[in-house]
Length: 487
Ligand SMILES: Nc1ncnc2c1ncn2[C@@H]1O[C@H](COP(=O)(O)OP(=O)(O)O)[C@@H](O)[C@H]1O
Ligand SMILES: [Mg+2]
Image (cartoon, rainbow, N blue to C red; front, side):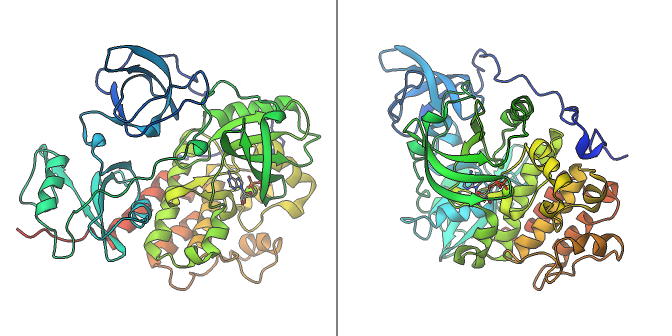
């Protein structure tokens, strides 16, 4: 049985909202601190920018009242035992008395992000970090810089012991690291210094006023045009003179009802994931409507893939990016949210080469009505045949688009179906059952994944969960964890 299909099954004309699961209550009510994870310490100084935020110094201790989202509600306890309460940016804190407090612990991170941290100026051979792999099965890994590359060592866990090589074993990750600081993995791979950590810039922090979703346009200043699609122009800008944001100004939205827009925004607000663009606020009291999101400085994946930096990426890094997108799509899939326009132009590349899916959430109220009236605007080369022909958008039509996105990634941003006219693709795919051949240098396993996304019957296509696992398995099989320590 296929559980991923569009719940409504009625195509673009439908106005129902039951394609989304009942959202979780948001924001959650303040909870009493959990005894397990309550005490945190500041890694850097922070200056409050308004009355709700707390100023603090590196080393200050906090009791966390509510750890939802980017701004945590916290009680600061100073050395005199005085308590102040307010919002603190979560990425300025680390758990006290745990490996998260260690300078080399970088949390959940893919290989590719680890590489980008290790290549940051100031790191030398032997700079290292410990991360939790994004591959569910892998757990902890050590990444160490060696001759302008990164090597990755998996930390295995069994029977409460931690080890890189079956012997010796240790009681904790901390002990593993301490051991390999004095016993090199090989002559060139010694853990020397913790990787330099970049302090997040205050102007890049998301706004802390979490309840303020509708904001006046006067609070925004537009700076540079970043991109323009069929539906919007996107500018970089500043909100309240202190927070850098992306401002998406919707085009031709006269027909868009404020109520429909608000409904859709309610859903977008609750979709929060490391690989999805975060929505900050909207301006919907007058046309044109604005959507305010986090600003992603490196811009979209398509341009990134075609840039010098993108052209230099090896297959391992490319597939890592695809796995990150799949991870974000697993989340959307789990929330029964259909993207409808998954493509490299709608994925953004952030700091540390973190990929974030953008341009989601409004497709049903903005894009589908336009596709009906003006079929030239349908992104034929990315859209599943049943979505073009019958208006049947589903998670499985997103999976089709993901296959095309994978093609774009592997080819460093080539246009799919080269030489074929946009609208011609539909007949080619449905009547002639044509599928693109494997791009040159594309590993067979990755091409097989693409082909599974392009199966004619939506229910025969894999889920995003399966795709993510397949991409991670590929990573694990080709990028073997290196090195065996000298005994
Ligand atoms: N948050 C962002 N940060 C940086 N660039 C962005 C951001 N959002 C969009 N862009 C740029 O603007 C382009 C169009 O944005 P998008 O949201 O896809 O609009 P449309 O709905 O018109 O397709 C993207 O391809 C990208 O280059
Ligand atoms: Mg777009």
